[in-house]
Length: 360
Image (cartoon, rainbow, N blue to C red; front, top):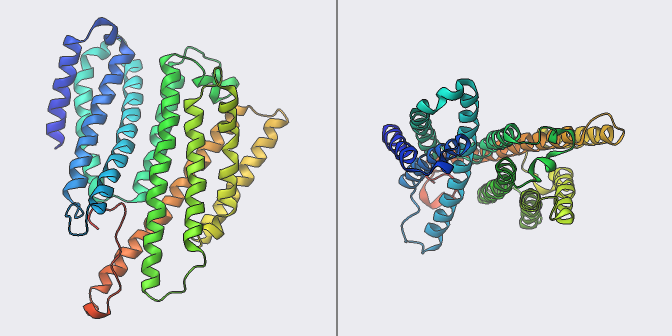
């Protein structure tokens, strides 16, 4: 698969450089097209790997399960395509600065090499997929996208104010930053869906094993997903509504994101009692750190950019830890179901179905 992607991605990039109009041969646009080609082949490899090992395409239980699996593939493909696009674009930008005018002759082969590596990684991860794997990708493409946009911006003093200033233009760098934020919101929605679905699946298994039920569990899960969804929509709003044409909407999304995130971390012990106490401690610690940093900004000791960067970094870290907790639940559930195979069929609990692992 890797060799196939390397050959055809290099071929497509070569054809592009030969046939594209001069306006599309500008250095930044060539790097963008190269990153898009790598993202496309990485996504193709992921789709093949994920669909090939899925057992949900039969219609024995109707159209719902295959349809849901199809939506999951599309959603996860968006996550992987966006991640590899920004990572490769950032890598190509760094290499271009190092090689200077000599970079053009290496671009075709770099695209082929990145496509081969991306295809291999996505194919392997498609066979070993979990919520924590997907969530671990989120910081990489956010950092890559913001770093690339910041390095390409013609406003070299944007960092003195806040991140909104970086996206408050019509330049390519500003559009790239806004696209990064929008895709981050979409990815948070996708990962939240898989995480909450896995928590529900795990809970059903514990009920089948005669464990004590959790009161109002469905309501808790709905509220948990709602808070995650509101946080993601605020991310989307920051990227969709630039400050200059839409100051009110932009400020509502940028400042309003603090409310669902704070409620999420404060109410987490009630919303998700299956998680470990360490997760609750981390949530409380993050609130204290961000609040302290916000006070230092009000007093004039730091810039708003530093506060925003710290808040986003800590939220990404929280999201990874949260997803790893979900991944641990999935592993425990799979082990319990494997052990149940040793029990006579008449005594086995009902088998649950994973929302993310293609083999289950």
